[in-house]
Length: 171
Image (cartoon, rainbow, N blue to C red; front, top):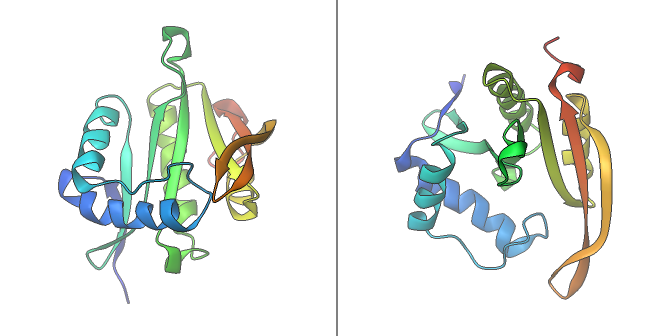
């Protein structure tokens, strides 16, 4: 039986986090980045984000299988009660509840920090991410057509929002 835990990310997790994320950069339109992210760049991102928001990893038997974090939705001060969710799961580990556990923990962290709204920015199509977010009460707020171009194809993006008082799970 494997030992699984969700815990705060550490700097020494950045190598594995980069591996997970770089797969999505190189092979999917889920991330609109087009160049892989080095360990050093991931460390800098983590340091910047964790000054204010949580960054979590799902670890099983010492191996990170997914990660998630909250980040600023927009930089202007009036947006300080809103955060964006980010969740990535190892490509061979999807569909096993890892993303569910990570998102649940993010929602609880957001409540503890007295955030008001969470935003999910989802490259479309991505039915599994949509289902996951809707399970927690996120509702579609916007659909932007052809706002990104990756792999020579125009890509759509949808915004899903959760007012934390509207959450279906944990209420």
